Image 1 (cartoon, helix red, strand yellow):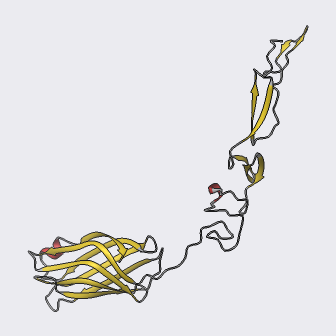
Image 2 (cartoon, helix red, strand yellow):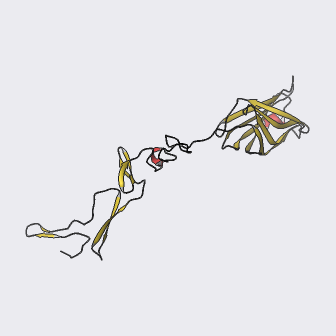
Image 3 (spheres, helix red, strand yellow):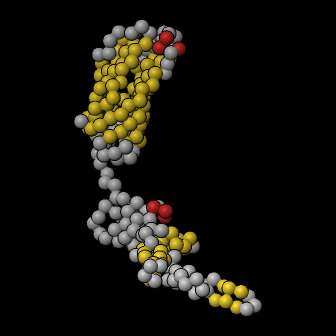
Length: 230
């Protein structure tokens, strides 16, 4: 016996020799940290951190020092089982009964200030630009693109399918026919809402036709766009 408290009482046998003792204080609970104080000859079982996995089948986690099956409604957000929140399944809160965040719908329509869209090709023969785009018809119509030959002067409306926010996607377009032997200009804005008041996407200008020249050979012209509600 080495006289130490925290490694237990050793035993000695004439046939088997000395056997190590059993450390005191082990409560066989996976959700406690067993500690021993050699100076005071005392032990303690301290609760492990909430959320520590203590069993895999079924998935169980430590809660207040106890190993409990992880469920929606236990007041702990267990991201390991896909929970986004956990308010104990209280009513009228931003957390639903499946422990997912409640996302309120919003109206995608309205004006948005965008990162500048600006381009030209064929030595300035074709031009396009926009600094503000306005959604209407639940995003099925987007107005504010200016296009034209020599200098952009005419506002255009790009059209597509309706969308939604804060997470819907959209794709709207406008084509300016060039006529026989001319150059068709097609402008496409595609993206997704990233929040109630924001979206991001790409603006693409492409050209086709015998008169397009460098506009066709040098394109399509793609611009990344970020937007915030005005």
